[in-house]
Figure: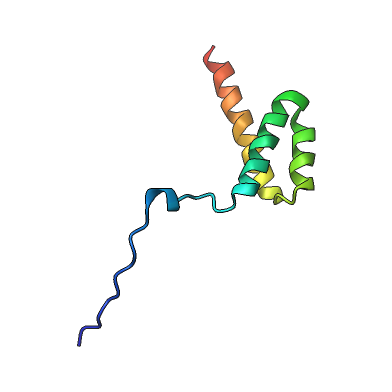
Length: 75
């Protein structure tokens, strides 16, 4: 006997974002910008003070460093 499947509501593209917490996303963006002006450790400390998890801090700051090193390698 087949079970009736419920239709899932359509998800609009603007609702299907990976970032659910826009406040923290803003803090992370400010931390990344801070790294440019004040350096890696100041940015990491800023993000830590705003309760960003250590694994996220490492990932976002490392990604920026990795992108920057690729840029320098290309020159």
